[in-house]
Image (tube, rainbow, N blue to C red; front, side):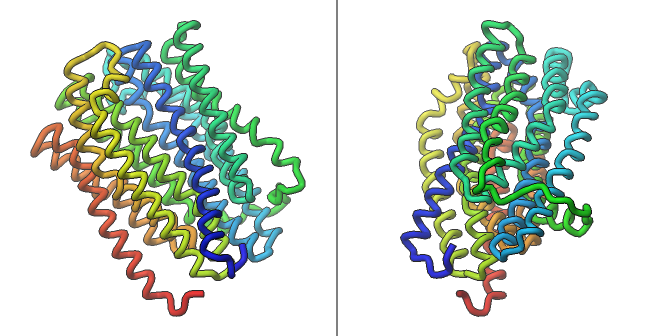
Length: 444
């Protein structure tokens, strides 16, 4: 991008990237939302509870793929903008090898420890077998999930956001169709749900694979020495993405533990509705953040502070608009939304979910701000504030808040933990951003 690009062209470029990435991320998040819907219809509250207990592991897998993909993609964009093509290819090659190595660990966990993980996550006899099955299959498909995350990030950073979106949406649509076929006509139960989810990234990779044979593709495998410094740079830049995803999984585990004691499996099933809708909303914010990441990284590599700040303003404006729409819709339609996932018409589940939707999603706008400001820091190679924000919203603030507010106010307190913690972290993030601006002497 030219350093002299006008404001209107910056805005058009921003809208192109974030619209494609938001649609793609919504599609990607529907991997789990489709499972939630069809499992609730086919297997009832116990199936929904089993799914919700197992889903955090998917967050770990997806987070690992995004950590490598986003970290390497950021490094790649900066190097390409500086005309360091050979170094950019070395980043891609190293990231690919690292992805396969880490995915192998997940596969081994799936083969040997699925039952133990299910018990650790709180599965009781009523839901143990379903949770174990879901965990084992999702872990065995880890290489596909992680390679898909990596390749989507590189395709996007190589100037093909349309194809990245097509891959994400194509995989998601296949998951929805296969979910229905496997659960209902084929009667495969929870195994059918997770098999459909596992096949989705395979289809996504098939959709984007022709790009690697086109002349416009500028990232390639190149023989290189695996450098610890290069890998550390990739992981450092991508760590906030890992923390964000892993944090959502750990928060789900903690909330499940607290809610199991307060309301049992029905409470966990109600939380499953909220948590999985939250994954979709978070995916929208992540789509905005991933959309501006290549733009800010390229602008940073070219030394254009003006463009970086413009893309950040646009991103935060998009977050505000999305947050108002999401919360207004969920507040007004809480009863209808909860009923979609309440196939047994369980009155207790309905009541818990409706109250939860209205309180929990108050945290939307703060979560969106935190995700976008974190990507701003990583895109400009200023990783420490991004780590602070990610750790704060993922572990340091929300977990103590959940225990403290849950003990003080029961389920209402549990629902309040999310907006309260996101608000606190957003104040910290705003302070870190203000401090970072003082380090800039003269914008370009």
